[in-house]
Amino acid sequence: MGPKGGDAGCFCMYFRQTGAEFERNGGEKNKGLMKEIVDSGTVPGLLGYVGGEPVGWVAIGPRDWYGKLARSPVAKPVDDRPAWSITCFVVPKKHRGGGVATDLLAAAVDYAASQGAEVVEGYPVEPQKGRMPDFWVWMGFASMFEKCGFEEVARRSETRPFMRREINR
Image (cartoon, rainbow, N blue to C red; front, side, top):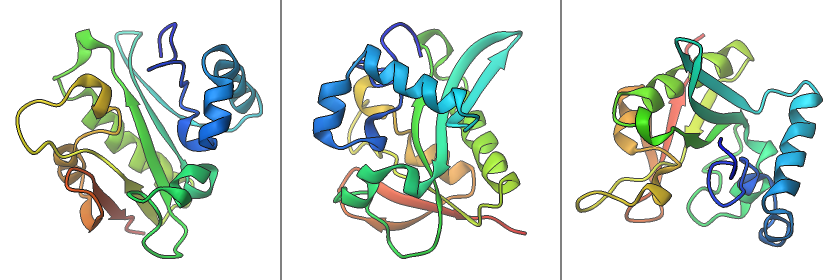
């Protein structure tokens, strides 16, 4: 995630905390909290490698790990079914545009299925015009979710579809 933890000291803790907690824990505290999660044996996401070099990260886990989703006007649950959520991608600039995030998304779906997930959700962006600033694309693009078999099941914002994929057993 780099020295700043992805963006602004997040370390993929944004959706795991309330807004006040996130503000209070920015940077090193969030890094420590993520380390505690990893040290506990919980898998908070997946890393992608090319030739032994890390080229990307995707955060995935059961939706109930991410309390902020339940309070989000865009990403609040569409039903009570247990689902796994994909909340974040981090791909260094030199590896963007080559399909790394799409590969990570496919791997995340496979991982969730291996853990017993029946539904995987994502809350990507869908630009209306031109290119979106890098800051806003950490949730992925709707097009890559579609490429990986996700379907839009709700849209509570013009640029943020709620995407879902059923896992075939």
